[in-house]
Length: 400
Image (cartoon, rainbow, N blue to C red; front, side, top):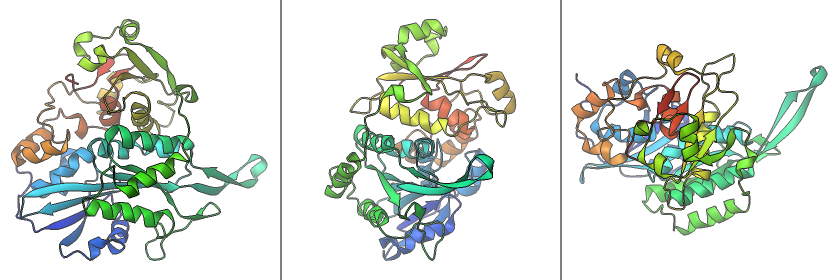
């Protein structure tokens, strides 16, 4: 089946946006991208990860390079540079913006949009309120103003992620006045270009100029600034974590099949049990928000060493959820035939080295977890094992 038409592209930047053209335009107008001699175009990311959605949105072979960044969730913005002289296509930056109240669960929910970019060593940032005020209904119908502030753990999460991935993974604050967010006068979904947003643009310009290493003075200073707001992180602070246990005892307790476990799972002495109580509320079956992002956050905070190597396993206990029902709903697919080595989602080099027809064949194979549901893409691939009420699901890649 025909998938993409390969064309000879000019030297250019692409600002990929997640359905908000005006937001992408705000970035273009306020950055050097509007002043470059090279062309800059604004394009919408695929609306989903289904093969049909990808086929409709991705037109050139170089477009496939965004796939590793959207394998879990789509960030708001991805910036790509394409150079016809060298044949090089490079993702240079990714970012996510949020306007929700900034206590732990909301920024943690969005961490799955940061997680893969940082692992791929793409400079990435989250912009969120430092504080946000809102009126909330109290008893007897009375409304009272409540101010929420950014959780100190979020600063720790971004510092840790920067260090373990050796990639700038930064946090900036949306400008506010007494907890009320200030937006751009021309682009109402974007923040005003003041306070931290000026620094966010500095970060973007470093990425555009290919001067965005972790050793850069601006980045080092910004991480130091984040440290002043950070807090010590403890497992005991989270009721979604049941605890850390000996791996051999976990294998016995849940009767895990060692032949289906990854090599690292068996080698690692400890296993963290992630057991949220709200995975299956009356309004949904196998809920993702905020738990999918939390899973990614806990992986970085507790399960990796200073070099980013996995030293502790994660087992997701999905209570009140059955794998058989998820299979009937199409939420989980059979991935036993999935080829990790030929998966364009796996890393940036894979998305470039594979031919167009190889990528098309893989995406339409029906066995790639990254073309399945958000539950399978994140829960199924970040957790090493999921223990459902009726079955056990093992992560696809057994080599790591």
